[in-house]
Image 1 (cartoon, rainbow, N blue to C red):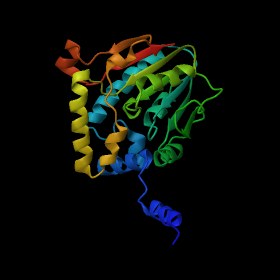
Image 2: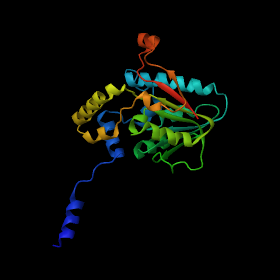
Image 3: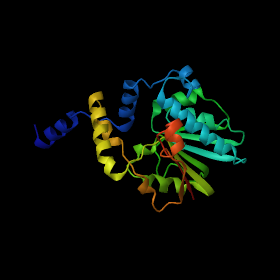
Image 4: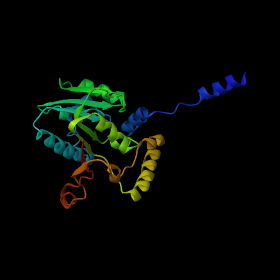
Length: 244
């Protein structure tokens, strides 16, 4: 056999490296976070004993209360919307049009099937320069999704590009670490996915710091380190808003 042909055959015989979408779905299945349509419709109230959903219920209620006070029509984009439950909640606002974007076809398909509203759409796509060339939004939300972007600056620059004048970016349900804590958190993350049998997922989960917001016009709307939160609510995530 010709050597170049043999090399090509060996190359194509190697197992294909799973992409983020495949890995994410595998993690969701392992964590028992793939929901039926009925369960999805009930989120975040489906599992009242889940600390995660208790936290996300608090944060979503804070966000929606904030948006209601805008008292005007809002074009909202949720980046990394997953199964779409939060996008659907925001679409209940009386003056809104909501777009949910995600790279996970399985959950986007379910969201399109379960949540049918005239002012709500779900798109299967990556978030990059070509995703929204002409559209502009008043609000861009990253809820439990910024940790899957390797660069905070890159993701925020993309979001700023598609913001209308006076628009805002909201980041919530996302862990942030002091620089000295990030390496230890990364080790824990790698052990977690190794134990799960999906070690490649650790390469797609990033441990960011609040310091990465330097240079952006941002404010902290909810600080988990506040005395009141530490005494009562114990919600662990910041809520950060950036203005264009």
